Length: 163
Image (cartoon, rainbow, N blue to C red; front, side):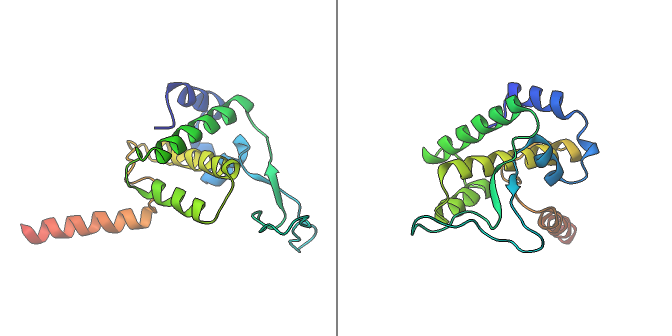
């Protein structure tokens, strides 16, 4: 869902071995889905607003850096748009990704920023799947590994108590 054969093939071709990225954040930066920083010294100064609309930008951050492979980035944006379309049609199962999109919409983020952050989330999910060698499960995607480990420990303890 969101990542098909074309995106997966291009991802493997461009990225190669995922093990060379120690954190998913560095892979997202390598592909170019992170915002540029406009930070002066040690002080985060937001740009001046020209209207009375709420400032939805983070301090000192602007558009995405556009570094990395352009085709991969555009394919990931299309995959993110497909996921968002499934969400709007209520075809996306109830999972952490759905809750995350709800939160982004509650913060009144614009469509483009939601797409970029969803594409970055897809990159982080792909990093986790390729790094840990596990099969993708939509109900586990977006759940921290510590919570998953605790859930696995509870199921093992419950099985031991039942035996």
